[in-house]
Length: 581
Image 1 (spheres, helix red, strand yellow):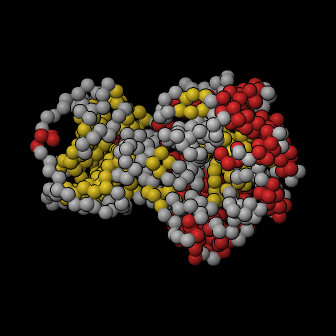
Image 2 (tube, rainbow, N blue to C red):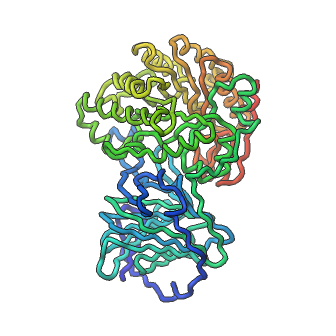
């Protein structure tokens, strides 16, 4: 057997002989009863996976996250980071009284490359990147197995290539054994000591295929004194959690504003892997907004092949807890898949329109409340159509504008309304609430379209450090200018919502609290404002829009370290007072 190890890069390998001594596997640990993941939970919410006759059939999804910024795309082609499926709303392993565990997976009928991921927790996902948790990806292609080893300390993984002995078939057995703080991975009995611990209190799984393969078994066994249980997140682990009387939505409802939607953007991974955060969301809000899960690259990563599993799971979670879902976003100049970039570059206007209309129709109709997949009543149809540098005009550098022209905006709304005549459809952008040129450009656009095309305008309300240092902006916001802005849109027959509020602390927690309270209070007191939504209700390793301090941002009204207790900042208390005012 030959082992070669390397680090960094995509497929670059640094050849290095690695000896494996018999002692590495010489002392067997006492093994407890094996638990079958295939029989212990639901797999319906995993992209690319179909459960059939006690096995899992894994197909290629092509899921990837666009890394290149719109500015960079003017001079270079877009680059992507793979974002393979992880079992979120399904089974994972919880460990107690130790972390010694054995996990075994049987793979059959491998076509192309088969990859199974064994992770300490689900990856953190953002608009423009994916941050890996500690774990091991085991990829098998014919007679070669490749280990990709992720750690919490290193940004780039270590890669190890293993030549497999003996005649090869399309079947393989993968075994992981973590004992005494060290993990050994074996592929068809050939071991490689990883020399570090991967699993702590949990073990999560993922699977992705170059073409396809079958998982015939996936079992977990505790070793020595470790206790092991299987948690199926497709079943409701928060069934007993109800809204709190001191939650923001409850306080607003108690003071006659129960019609207002108050919520936060969420990711399914964060909700299901962070129980304190999930309980906090249920207790405080009556709405959740899709952060990345409903964007084009997540729902149609390959042309004509939609991946709805995770969004289905989020909608099901919301319905169980009486939460509305705000869909974000159908048409966007970012967060699109590679195939769309290529297709739009050579498409005629009619071809580009057909692509856009099909996507909007498939997505909106699926969640119209009549097709068995739940309801998303309100959608951000067009997101950030205005120029980031010239705030008074549309962005002509997006793939949509270049292929279709300005009419793509009206066409998108027409497609959404045709798919669900009862839906509510909006346009969403930043700095509308702080910049007069941007706001006037939005108003002019609305006037150019037939009345009733746009139901609402989303005011993102991102207040970073520079915005908070702008005295004119602060005077306009804190001086009571928001109701006048809301009224400008009311005069056009268009409602508003504060759609992605985030306010940097900027060294002054009381100033942060004042802005948050003014945003919420102005919306609650305005008949034309339908709701208030934050771009993350707590600052932790998952959510931040300002420069983080040790991985934790400072722009949310609460903070959390890891999955520990959620601590309120003065901003949360100020918003509670605003909800009661």
